[in-house]
Amino acid sequence: MIDNALRVPRLIAESKIGSVPTPWPSWLIAAHPSPERAPEEVVRRFLADLTAHVRRFDSEENRAVKDIDFIKEKFGYPEEDIKARF
Image (tube, rainbow, N blue to C red; front, top):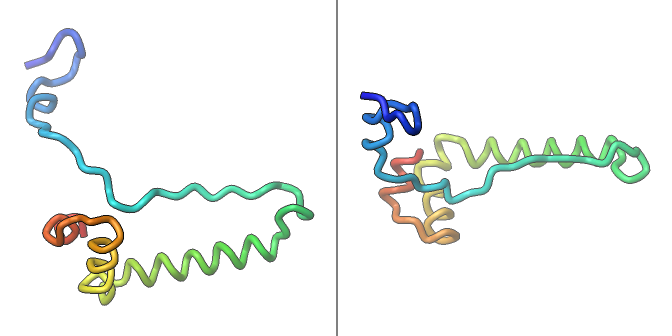
């Protein structure tokens, strides 16, 4: 069935109970185009370090315990919710 006001399937609109945002922020990285304000090597090092950290955080080993504990302590989410997200 289609809801004429929204032109979306009612089944989808009515079946959604709600949403919970992830307990961690999304990222957008921007740098000034001027090499004086954002030297290329500094930007590259920052991105390399950030990538390494994200990969460690996203590893299966860390997802098993360390990441769950971090999210629980930092953001107060229940362990069951965190595990469901992972």
